[in-house]
Length: 49
Ligand SMILES: [Zn+2]
Image 1: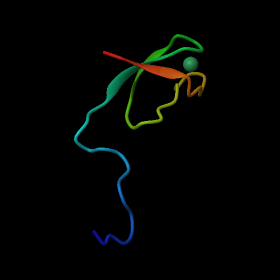
Image 2: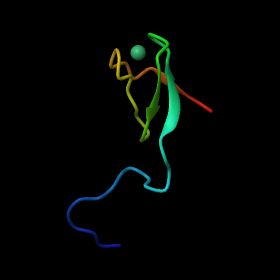
Image 3: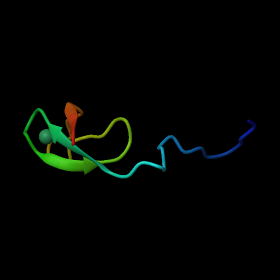
C-alpha cells in the first residue's frame, strides 16, 4: 500500500448509525468512530440499534 494524499478514515461501507447522548439524552445519527452530540457537542454518546 502506497497512498499519497487524502485517505478516508471513515468506513464508507457503513451507513449512519443511531446514537444517544448520555449528557442530554438526545438521539441522533452519526458516522465515524467518534461521533458527537449535535445538541451539546458532548462525545459521551453510546450506539443504539
Ligand atoms: Zn447531548
